Length: 520
Image 1 (spheres, rainbow, N blue to C red):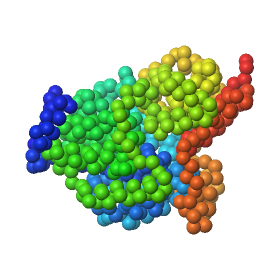
Image 2 (cartoon, rainbow, N blue to C red):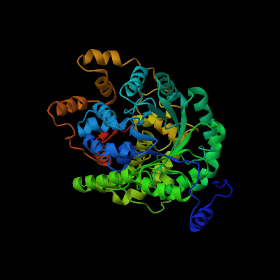
Image 3 (cartoon, rainbow, N blue to C red):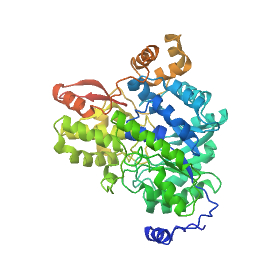
Image 4 (cartoon, rainbow, N blue to C red):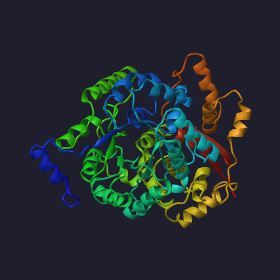
């Protein structure tokens, strides 16, 4: 089998191959599948509400289906079980590893220097987190940063490799004037040179990749990392283009793609494993997964969805407006419902345009956690208040002053002036030095093991204690499982009923600190 060259690759050329009956099934080239059903699929479609009992029911088939890796956790898979499901996520990790098919490679992903928090965490917490991921069974560990600031992930990747894990470094994708092919060449080279990663992931959390961009971007990244380093692509189905984007990726030499098993696929999630396997095989590629095992998982997922009234993913029509605001699907849905709750449904389109404007003014941060929440919250405040940047979340000022890393372009001067003026004056330029946190936590909670201590370092309040109580009472997994947030409702209430002060908002997995100034 000979793949099409970039200049030959088009929807028409692919259609002609399919119309001619596909390519002969004698290819030596395999496209490997990384399964996301147990992590990003339910994160995107079920608000991370897959319980351990669900996973155990699916585990035998998933881990015997022939996937290259099985994606299991990012920090949110620790946060949500504690806060809402009242399950011990570390115990879940151990149970899954103990009951999986021998040789299964589960993946863990680390988010920058903040893990499940929005603020950066001390180095001792980050290092201990990586060590405990490895100690609890993970042999594939990766990291990403929303600004593609390699400083924020290098230590994690180096430590994981020293421990013995296979490592992957993420290039977070975004569509903007500053996210050029050359930028990704530079960042890929830096990742490889500084961390000696075992593979590179092009991570498109916003579902923004297009087939046309793949024709330039994949060869660009490949030129930076060489032919031998595995390259994988991760995207979401938010614009209707992702299945075709994956086919282009295969034709352009990508080694692995991320899919999930329908009905927990499509929509806000990844493309469906079943459909991609069919199309890739028709193009002559080997896809060595067990279709019967995949079908078993599919049936069980549908049974869970029917029994518990959970949504299923559905293919989406092309959505060009998505490229304007680039909000993740879950946030988009939440904002729409929350504006309705606040009696502001007629402002939804205004919010989309304002989100795009704020994102541009803030130098195009990639719209993934935590920056999607920061930008979205600022846009909500601007729309509700009627005066742009009159109320500034603390996190926005921290971002503008470099606390989370170096933006890829200058922030709009007018916006920056308002952010500095109206944001909390306690926030200073530059990232503050953080003292080690573990000694104090261990002294405060002498009976907790290190895994529980790390949960406390990430998840504030009494959430860990409540989780432990549910577990001790034999009610693990019986938390309320609250989905969605009340962010806009809370913001509206604060704005209407107060004149000045500091406020802390919680909405699902989101925490935002707001400062409102009184009249000068």
